[in-house]
Length: 470
Ligand code: MN
Ligand code: MN
Image 1 (cartoon, helix red, strand yellow):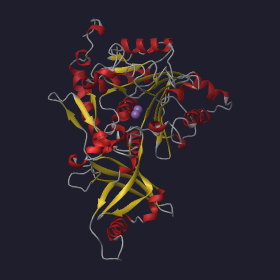
Image 2 (cartoon, helix red, strand yellow):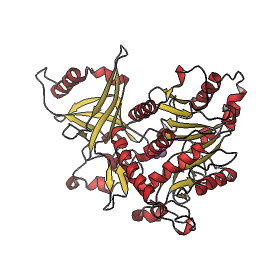
Image 3 (cartoon, protein in one colour):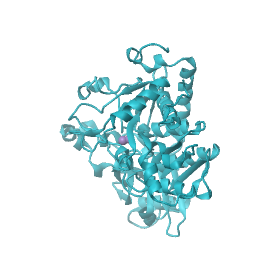
Image 4 (cartoon, helix red, strand yellow):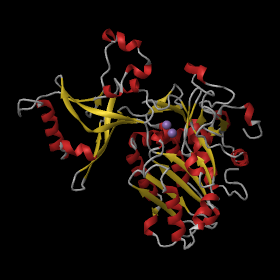
């Protein structure tokens, strides 16, 4: 395919040779396994750490000095982590960073969730992130997370994923009685307080009142050692209970929950694990809480990035904090997050000259934001040009993509929380159909393109350009 004008052959499949097509399908198979294993931010962080150890990465806090070719990881609160491949260049020359997020829209249990009514026991939820609430009714749900007892012991819950295992659900109203509901706006058809999860219906022997609830609490006590008050110090999340799978007669796509942004997590992790000796120190950041504004001590508005740089430079013997600032300001970053692919069922919200398409390669987004670029991190054209060059030099299938039509809506990523250090940042990720729904769709060609793009970027030497894939 080399030598052809890349722009006249937009479909990424046509840009892949036979070996690359095989790699795309192989990547797709392993990606589906990953999606089925890592269903929450904690499980994803655990997966990353296990993979890192398997590939010889060691915990940053256990090393006393920093040398080229060291492979390190740093995890905080079991929800945010980073992988580091130390390069030959001095740390204060900066890092090549790819930052993605491990959290996804879902339903969190309230601190006092359990109640009995009408012969059933239910769990109250508070949804997390931008969901269309009606999409979460009438589907099987799994329950994941941790319950921390007062003595500090932690109980891990993962229920509803295995075939034949119990699951949960939120019922929807029958059409026969939904006259009023069906006339409401879609955003109001299912209310936040209607997202209550059905969890039991057999009364126990004890007492006169709330006998079903008491029976469910007995099960929770016997099987997991959980008491009602323990829900107060828990993080329990309901996610769709169906597995990810191949989509299409040609198996060219992947359907499944949580691909925003685990498609970036998986592809950047694969890129990092397969990195050769980089010139600059390469860093993958896997952040939490992006879906609710990157807040808290596990989101990227925290000092995680700065602490990571400080931790590295301190161990490398730097005694001046200015070097931490210099390293971050000299860094290059890709904010690895998904974009919206043009959806043939809803073409009216897209602007086809500037939006991204399924299967046309990894998407480069100069700016995000909404309504006049508000809240956007607008990448500098010099940096965009450099990324274009390393992608083209290394035959990475890529496309340009703004999110939807102007004034139609918009969104943001973690890019602004990296850009504030002065580093160059560009949004770059996979185009998705059905974003934030319980079943999102991606293309395996884009999966491969993202993997290759992140690999090229992490490996790149900004003073020379990367030649690895040529
Ligand atoms: Mn995202
Ligand atoms: Mn999102």
